[in-house]
Length: 178
Ligand SMILES: CC(C)(COP(=O)(O)OP(=O)(O)OC[C@H]1O[C@@H](n2cnc3c(N)ncnc32)[C@H](O)[C@@H]1OP(=O)(O)O)[C@@H](O)C(=O)NCCC(=O)NCCS
Image 1 (cartoon, helix red, strand yellow):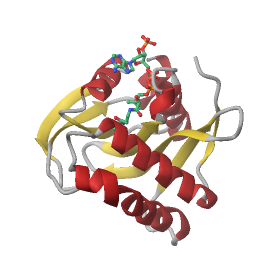
Image 2 (cartoon, rainbow, N blue to C red):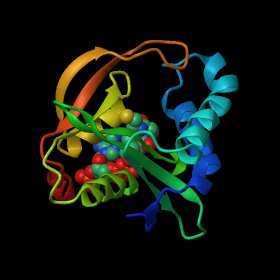
Image 3 (cartoon, rainbow, N blue to C red):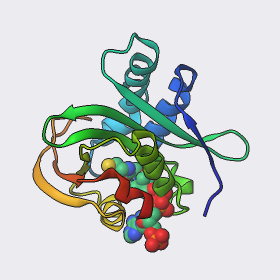
Image 4 (tube, helix red, strand yellow):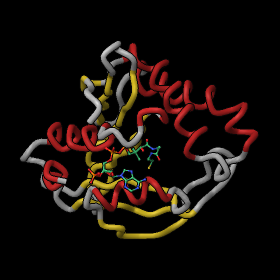
């Protein structure tokens, strides 16, 4: 298992998170999103999102967690929107591990950190959306005990609209033992 330091995401992480998000999409979503977007638009798109999220006044209850390697380089992150949906609970809006660090247990550590941050009093489900074409991530979420609860079309992003699954954990604490 890759040793990482987990800590809360801060405003000063906006650039590094945006860079890692763009690198992860370029690697994982090639062939799903357009080459034009992945080759030219994705960095500015992610920079705008993360700058706004982390440096503008907070309008939505949320938290982020980052994973750093021994050199302090950001190699993974997750971001959670609390109480996002009255039925499905809190939304894990992002979960990404650097393409070169995948398969080393960092994704699991980040999901478990989310469960710890939510705490034992969190009685709602936790959910996320995964693209149907993202087979590696679907296998990861299945391994983490997710229920594939609903299938539908994602809102357009990166120039396309794609089918996706709603993955749900009815009880977030099960992630601690996944
Ligand atoms: C999906 C992702 C977050 C998973 O994180 P990770 O660090 O690679 O996964 P981990 O090493 O923590 O894996 C945990 C468990 O899931 C399993 N797993 C992970 N990826 C898998 C895959 N592609 N196929 C089968 N099992 C997989 C691991 O084998 C491990 O199980 P084990 O302990 O029984 O061996 C990461 O690969 C990633 O960032 N992918 C690209 C971006 C992405 O698709 N993000 C999700 C968007 S919804």
